[in-house]
Length: 325
Ligand SMILES: [Zn+2]
Image 1: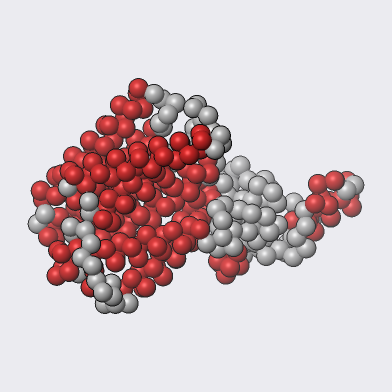
Image 2: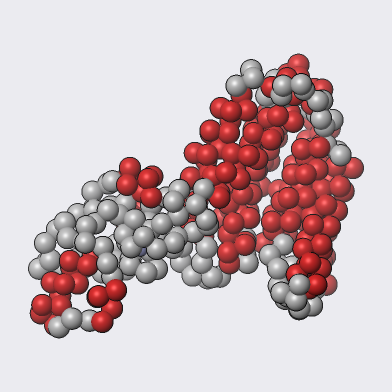
């Protein structure tokens, strides 16, 4: 049992790798298609192939003169022989193709699994996505913290932190832990996307809500905790409604993505109790407000500057969940 946090943290590293792919793909401006290749060199990013297969009509036909197996740089050299060198061709380095897919379309999973945590494009070695290992470490720490707080027997010199610690000691890891784990992993991706492009994509907020709702429903069915389930559902609606009112009062300060994220955070917080819901929401505003004040004091932001609010909502909610305030 004492190995459980370590095992879960390792699982979090793997989940973080997956989330990194989602973060890179979703870090695009509103209305743009998901990113499926490197903005600098055009090397397909992991899962770019699936997108290419979905949209064969829009894909450019492969030039028949170019030999299969050449890197983009070699391709452009071949082109340069015929139409003269382009200045951009000199800047595009890669001699050998080590991208996730060879130009022949062969799958090279280990290449991108090696390249991804370093946050470098396998084609041009330019920075892609959040800093190296950032997403992976956040998800691993979040999952380990959840297990440590939920199952204190895994904690050497255990402190029975949180209201749900006592219950979980007898029951072991339960359905609610799965729900919070899911929410933590998807919320980590949302936090990084929000920090990068100031928006919370619908696919991810929907995944966060559906996963949390389904897993909490399963926990309620297994453990007969229907009061908690009803409170969770109402909590999600209440927090989403609260954020919707804020959005309608001041559309510049809050986004509809924040409203959708509030639905899943409210559900998770409501499961633990109304006081936890209020504490989680309050801590989010406190953290976001303090950050805004610090930025203004440092003159890094003005009164009208937009700050991504999602990271603070998530931090506040998980602070309340972990401590069970
Ligand atoms: Zn690149």
